[in-house]
Length: 214
Image (cartoon, rainbow, N blue to C red; front, side):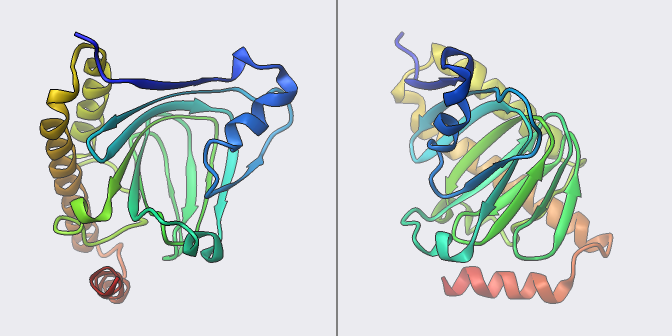
């Protein structure tokens, strides 16, 4: 069985002077700033599952910046759901600065400005088209932990581990499963945040209107 094709980035395969530039060139929609001096190291694997991209990565401390002007030039209409397995992260995705640690989620709308400031991290990431999540998702920029979040993380890791033994006939099933699970986890996180009064209800209404209008 051929498995899902995998794209791999390994910084140690490059001369040290080229590592950071090569990694930064893989994501043209963000500006990258090294937060600490010293050798840069990054490792990533990415698989396409239908219209979803699953990525596992570890990287030294970087700051990610995307201005609204940069976001407006992006043709893709996706959410990034980053599942942080280690390290600390602070982010502002248009709704104010939020912070999280291991087992937190960061939900980024690709057409929204964002500043993301993680420490050295290991993470799982899903890039999901907005059309797959919109019926399930009412918020972005939220960084929850607890609740159903560990189930999502373990499930995405299990999918990543299984992809070498699967083939493209499984793509539709996996795509639907990941979108349904991610949507359910995020809706649950929003509900818990609202119950805890940690989410501005006016902001929540504005976000829903924005998504519906766009």
